[in-house]
Image (tube, rainbow over all chains, first blue to last red):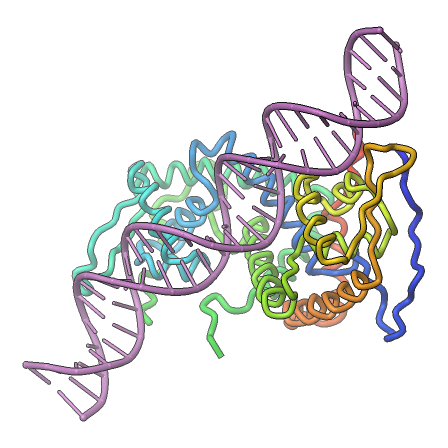
Length: 164
Length: 164
DNA sequence: AATGAATGTTGGTGCGACCAACATAGCAAG
DNA sequence: CTTGCTATGTTGGTCGCACCAACATTCATT
C-alpha cells in the first residue's frame, strides 16, 4: 500500500492563522467521534435491538427517568422533533411498550406512559448501549472517562434552549 | 411550564445495575454534542458555505493537508465512503475547486489535486468552521478545550485502520 | 493465463434532524 | 363572547451523512 504523498504544506497562510489541520478541529473530532459512536450503536441496535432504534431508546429512557410526560415535553427532553416523537411513539405503542392517554386537563395533550414490557425492553437496550459505550471509551482510563463526561456535560448547557 | 412529574423510579432493576439515566451515558452525550455541532455547522454552511457541505470541506481540508491523493486514499483519510467521495468530488470538480487526473502508474486510479480557487474556498470555510467551533466551545476554558481535544483524539485510534 | 484485489462509479437504503402545514384545544385580551 | 394567539399532535416532505451492493476496469499475484 503506497503511503501516497508525505505531508506537504506548500502555502503557509499569511494571515497568521495556523493552516487547516483536520486533526486540530474539535468540530471535526466531535463529528468523527459521533460517527463512530453512532455506527457502533446502529450496528448494535441492528443486531440486538429487535427493531428499535436510537429514537425509541431515547424516548423509553426519558419516560423511565422522569415518568409519564406529554409528547411535547418528551420532545424537549430528548431533543427530538415533535413529528419524529409522534412516529417513534406510534412504533412503541404498536408493540405495547408505551401507552398514550388523553390528558384530562388538556384534551389536546396526550400523556405517554411506559409499560412494564417497555421498561423490560429498556433494560435490554441499556445493556446494548453500555456495551457500545465500553467499546467506545476503551482507550480512556476511568479518570479520563469522568473528565470526558464532565466536559461533555458543560458543552450542553441548555436543555430547554432559551431562544435569545 | 409544568414540570410534569417528579423523578420516580418505581422499579429498581434487580441486576444491581444503576437505572437508566440519560445524563450519565456518554454515548448519549456524544450524540447530543454532535447534534449541536452538526446543527451549527449545517446552518453555517447553509448561510455562508456557498453550496458546499461537510463532505466538501473534509475533502478540501484533507487535500490541503496531505497534498494530492487518490480518491480511495481520500476516503480512508476522511472516513468517507468511496461512493460519497466520488459524488462530492464531482461537485468540487464542477466548480473548479479540485482536479482529477489519471495516475500514470495505475491507470485505474485518479489523482485528485486541490486548485488555487479550491484552496481559497477552503480558507473561507475554515473561518466558518472556526466560528462555529468558538460558539460550540464557548462554555469551556482554554485549558478545558485542550483537555477535551486530547480526550477526543484518544477516542479515535485508527486513522488508516490497520488491516489486521 | 487465471485469480484475486483494488479502484472508481452508479444506485439504493436507513437513520437522524429539520421544516411546513394543518386541525384541534386552551388561554388571554379585546 | 369573540377574536386572536399559542401549544399540541399529526402528516408529509427534505436534506445530510453513513453505508452497502454491484459492476467494469486495472493491477498484482500465483
